[in-house]
Length: 218
Image (cartoon, rainbow, N blue to C red; front, side):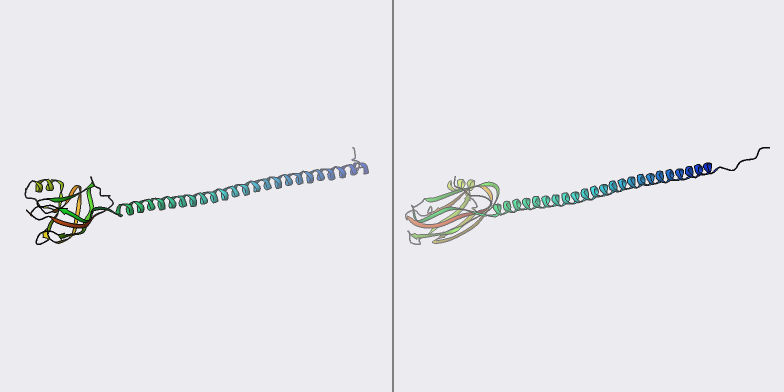
């Protein structure tokens, strides 16, 4: 029967060295693993921080872009409004034509003075206004003042009955104020047609005023 010999001091020392070495190696590997884990975690954190920063930057840029678009839209709206206001102001701006401006025109018996103007629009907002005075001629110093559309003027001139836009009858002083709402050719007539003998001297200032339209002479 064999008996086991107790370990020699050499064997025991060797075993102790192996245990210590193994433990040391395990600790080193554990520390290395922990270091790698820490490094990986730090890398992941940096990536998360970078991603968050990128998101925040993108959000800020989107906000700035939105504000810029709103400013541009606001400017475009303001420009369109300014253009519209300018057009409305231009359309409503009064424009004048001095139709009659004389200090003394002589009109013979059975004659008339004809002042013609044209409105180049189908609809208008115009007014013919002014004052005409007979300075001398005849017993009553009078004339007749008419405002005709073109066809009515032709008919009146050929002794047909018409309805003028304005007619005073025989007067020494005529204050004229007549609205014209349609385009076309018009005639302001200062008539001494009814007189068979007397010549009349007449002075007058008559203006055609239109909004958004320039009246003109043919």
